[in-house]
Amino acid sequence: MPSSPALPREVADRIWVIRHPWFDVNTTVIGGQHGVVVVDTTASSREMTRTLAAIERLGAGPVIAAVNTHAHFDHVLGNAALGAVPIHAHEATAEALVAFGANRAPYDGSEGGGERAAEIDASPVAVPTDTFSSARVLDLGDRQVELLHPGRGHTAGDLVVRVPDADVVVAGDLVEESAPPAYGDDCWPMEWPTSLDLVIALMTDTTVVIPGHGAVVGLDFVHEQRAGIGIVAETIRDLAGRGVPASQALAQGEWPWPQDRLEHAVRRGYHQLPRASKRLPLI
Image 1 (tube, helix red, strand yellow):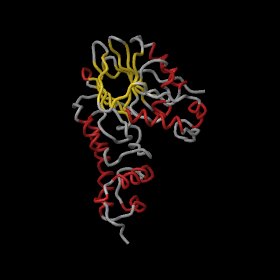
Image 2 (cartoon, rainbow, N blue to C red; image 1 turned 120 degrees about the vertical axis):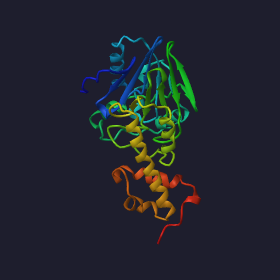
Image 3 (cartoon, helix red, strand yellow; image 1 turned 120 degrees about the horizontal axis):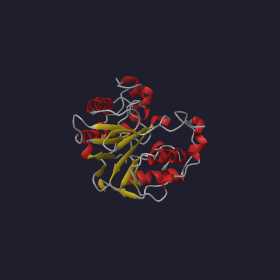
Image 4 (cartoon, rainbow, N blue to C red; image 1 turned 30 degrees about the horizontal axis):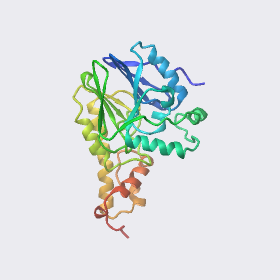
């Protein structure tokens, strides 16, 4: 049986974070005059149903909208529990979820959810209903919530959520606190640094930054992680420019994180580099 869901913790005026032990993923709740917006819906319908009960106990009003920061299952498979609530996301996220629903395989991962694989598999894929390409503003009556796509990075459809009056940025998996940044088979490692630069431009020295996974952080942490993400991109660019084959890049490069976490970054990075920036492999 799953443990009791984590309790919402208020990190700014009427903004709560629910840090789920399962996958250490965060759900953010933003309250306003008209109700609340929920950012990311966890890895299953069942978990999200329990999370909605915890949100209701806040007494901050009904859930009037939800946001998916990107398409990965641990952030979206609770969508169906929201019923008719509109779900906002970047258009690439919606496209990815359509493809995921059409070609879905049983969950076979072990990190954080192996013992609850059946619960994950039983959760329908509910595709976001309200998509955009660049930016959108949600009006909560007495505050506005900004949704911004800064560019590709962790996925093609990453977005961040900014609450200007509270100086809060919800970063999704463009920023992770409890583990190194996750480079999956849909990442954009060469674009991630500049996308994160645009997110940093939205922050101040006192901004509360809610990452996709782990504890709330601030600007200094984001700068530090951006530096590592930049090193990954520049190392890939340097190795490719010197003719080092992709198959040898992990062994020859100096990386900020363990090599086994960067296999997709190297493969995808080499593929995404323009031909002119790559030399023929060294013999």
